Image 1 (tube, rainbow, N blue to C red):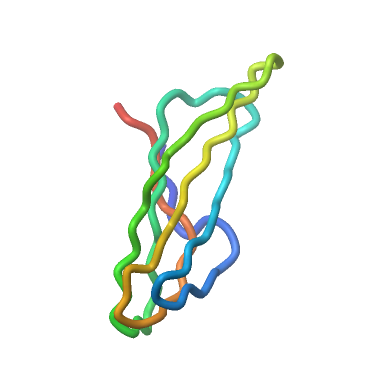
Image 2 (cartoon, rainbow, N blue to C red):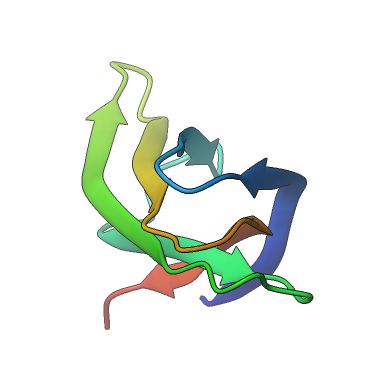
Length: 85
């Protein structure tokens, strides 16, 4: 299931990183999240990396991703992504 425009807007200046986590309340298998980059954009390129998953003993999975602005300008983003199928 794909998702767009999830979470609060975050502004990243060049070189800054935002640390995100999200959960569905259960395990949705492999998930990928990236930056849903907004406009206006001052030339920012957002890199999504360090995709991670944690699963509690009660079956709830939490997913993690880092978003880093590689510059040259700043920009707002939130998350978009979905499962691998």
